[in-house]
Image 1 (cartoon, chains in turn brown, red):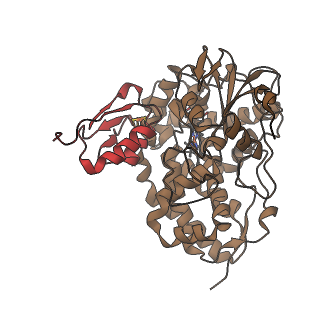
Image 2 (cartoon, chains in turn green, cyan; image 1 turned 135 degrees about the vertical axis):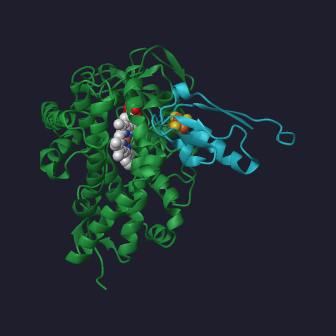
Image 3 (tube, chains in turn purple, blue; image 1 turned 30 degrees about the vertical axis):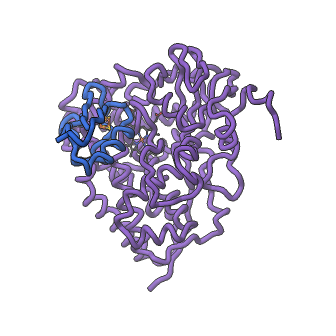
Length: 404
Length: 71
Ligand code: HEM
Ligand code: SF4
């Protein structure tokens, strides 16, 4: 099993998840993390950059301002991207900016996503959750949990927070799905983005004319944002809010249903919810990958990353680093998983994380509590996985329960 | 233990207020960290250390002193 010389050969990004392991990162990532947690990687466009899979390397790079997030400096790590670096971030997409441009957007928004403000939404999230549980119960056993529970709850919440009419969802949900798909050709992705922006343009015009008491209404009257910026921010927040938590709810339920002892622990001990959410975030890492580019030569973990080289950051691999999380491949809701990288790290760490936490802390225990006999309605290996999407999870989750 | 924060570099992620709410808050308008107590009592120090380690922008610095003489 000695392949010494190959240890310096550039690798390609492992993307195949082992059959029967829907919760584990692609197996090749674990192997790399053990042997060379920061390694050279050949990108599909021919660029030779890096791949970071170890927790210390990932955290060091994400926390270091010498690594840029500007899309136009990044090579895409998955097949199907452009030749050469990505196009620059659309106006309003702060994930693709560095300080000080990034700082300006982040500061405009972060006061609206604080721990306290998000906790104030708890009652409303509980109400929305209860309505969906009532509807499920009313229709009787058997449902696709993605459609009936995991997707509508975060969608309703982000719509209310931003001030986007939920009734318009046919006009934005499809576009948001296309943006998140890795199968869609780039042109289709850009067309979907344009369509989402067009929808947002109408909404922003309405908010400018008649500011409503919601996030977009506030920004429309209190900030110095241009229309273009406001449209971009609105479209980005809407897309981010629609798809991320939804996948955590569905994939989290899938994980709990296949680990019944853990589900039981959460069902019987509501105080476990905060820890359970952190552990599920770590274990599932539904936003598995991000990319940075070195602005200058930087030494990381004893290796020299040269200016201009892209680094693919495997959040999912780092969250399974045994040096940081003992028995990393075990889902253990009692573990202290704080410090996980499921929301990223550094200045781009998720803006919506406190909202996602509230949604998850409400939705998961409520679901388990309402349907104590909840179980999968198909064999686990028939649940369709989102291997083709930027945000991982399941496309559908057929479940059933006993009527009492 | 002595706690300091660099508000200029805070990105309002809220890890501090989530982890050690008796010591850290975020201001209502801007979401920036607010230090409620620069000298956390013994029983809060473990949480403060976790918060400092979890801060994504490395904004929180701790100076550990000889706790036997600290007030
Ligand atoms: C469980 C659900 C969520 C997960 C797993 C998640 C994950 C992430 C990750 C990993 C990043 C960092 C990306 C990078 O460094 O390249 C990020 C950034 C971001 N997320 Fe989330 N997110 C979630 C929910 C949300 C929600 C509900 C919102 C809605 C407002 C949101 C808005 C954002 C924004 C605006 C950024 C960019 C922040 C910046 O660049 O400063 N996220 N998210
Ligand atoms: S955790 Fe750090 S970045 Fe986040 S609010 Fe607290 S001090 Fe600011």
